[in-house]
Image (cartoon, rainbow, N blue to C red; front, side, top):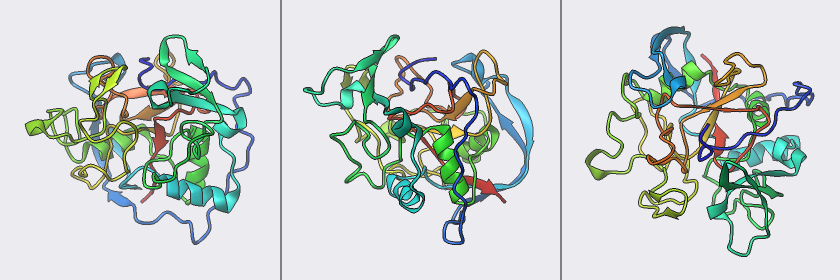
Length: 297
């Protein structure tokens, strides 16, 4: 898996998440989600860049609801304030940060062997995205990052919702379109217009930020797709429910995210498309990994 995406922790040998899940209250029940009709849905790519994107298949989905935007820092902070929840990154004491977002005088950190631009930063977590010196001040409307699937599921349970399945996520991400790679159609930048937050320039050394952003952007920064959802490609990867691994598709220790991030670039990682997938262990976290809330109809 291309590590411009995001690295994965070694899976917990116990395979069990022993923490209690916060329970929803009337004040936290999932509301304001976009209703999506059920029926037969076409998923996958007829022109895949990676093997895990095909074959194209048709699935039957019940109706469901999904959030217009990824969960923001402000929303996640409300959850933590109400529940005193402690994330996996906080428990481990570290998370993965893109080196280009660290200050020049940042202390030495351990890198990822196949992707030295990823650094394991002690003290990096959802509230300190670039390590202890950083905060989310001024980024309250940006997507929360450094959250594992465990963390995303805990938030979703507190809100009375859940994570979307992969098939639900892809249907919603496509915005009503089929057989095209992006939520708006076939072209990456139609008419020269930037439609999502991805790497601009030469990866990983130069990001021109031609789309307006070097790291995350607000959850509603770009125009919505045909179903009213923002940033279903680019900005941050989004956790989905269920197990998956490229080598063992039903591996219970496997987790999957969709949509690509601000680090995706055509020269190296073209996973900023609606059919692309990325595997992780469920306790993995990184500075480009977030999630979106879903719920039953």
